Image (cartoon, rainbow, N blue to C red):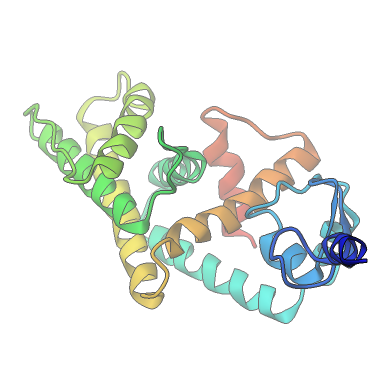
Length: 233
């Protein structure tokens, strides 16, 4: 009797939150989950396929809380990019996409402080290079250093043949990224990964839209496709 009761509970309780009853079939997980987890973890922790009926419904009729959150997210990123030229905007979006996709070696999620440290160290390195000096500024934390080490080769490849002009652009962009992370962190002091989660929300929407229209890309086109999605919500 006890076994049957336990089986029934496991069968109806959401496997993600382990507290609410299941109400929706999740095609990404192949499991029944609760509506709350479906709504809050969609495209953030759950890689929803483009044909998910719950995803389609949310796009057609987004809840008010989602609309407000998206407006806040977009407002911060657009504010962060308002003084950038087109080339710098593309570079900003490329760096944001790299940070969003970054997976640490030890699989520990990075915090906003790691993003800030990495961005500021790289910005200082490019500012030094723009003055004709070669000096590698390094973050203090291990996680930030690993993030910077992942970003640097991609930036180096993007700046090939562009000389000090690229160094100046990269420094400006990385300072903007650090400032955006600091501002979002100050608005959400109890959430150590608030900025990372913002990037996940905004860029997950862009990635899913790109898959829908076949324009997704893993190279330099990422920034351009992201730009259209970000600047025109």
